[in-house]
Image (cartoon, rainbow over all chains, first blue to last red; front, side, top):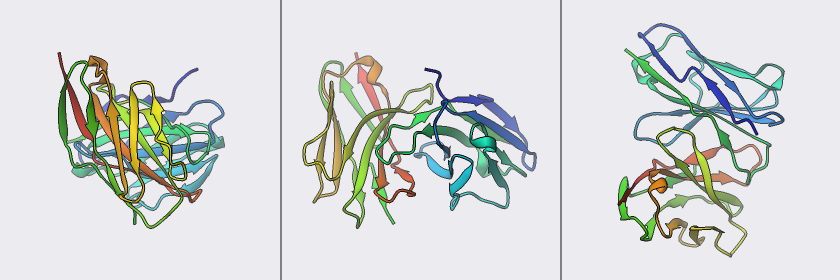
Length: 114
Length: 115
């Protein structure tokens, strides 16, 4: 079974630049999550999709972050413009949509904003 | 709002010994789910074990078991016969029984295995 694919694995940009991350979840998974993991902290949910609809984006800084999940499959997360405090690992996860389910995570994108 | 607290930033254990990682959570709900995830250096989070709050029996997965104390809001992870491959960050996580609620992670405990 193929896992959750994310790219790029690493990205270095300067502040005020734009960046985009891509996630391909496991085939058939209805739910897709984007998490931000700052060094030394646990993952924080940015946005949760159910198919191609948004379930929760309450912690997404909407003035600079945007995300979409076209056709309920792949997803992209964009930051425009980036700030120094956006330096983190961005994790994508997918699941079938059950409350007690095991989430499948990708290896994340490590973003450094200089 | 629900919170998850892991009070041990780092722990070490000798190979083949047993170690217990602590987790406490705060909630006013009666229906929820608890998880332990492992994050190795590859960054890919992997589910270790999960517990439904309505189940009194503690979950067990091979060398991993939990001590779930609902009244005390405590959910510790016990790793028996520790192996070098167990070295990783371990995150405790909470999810409400509300269908649309998000999973909340603690700050993690870094586990070192000493050969």
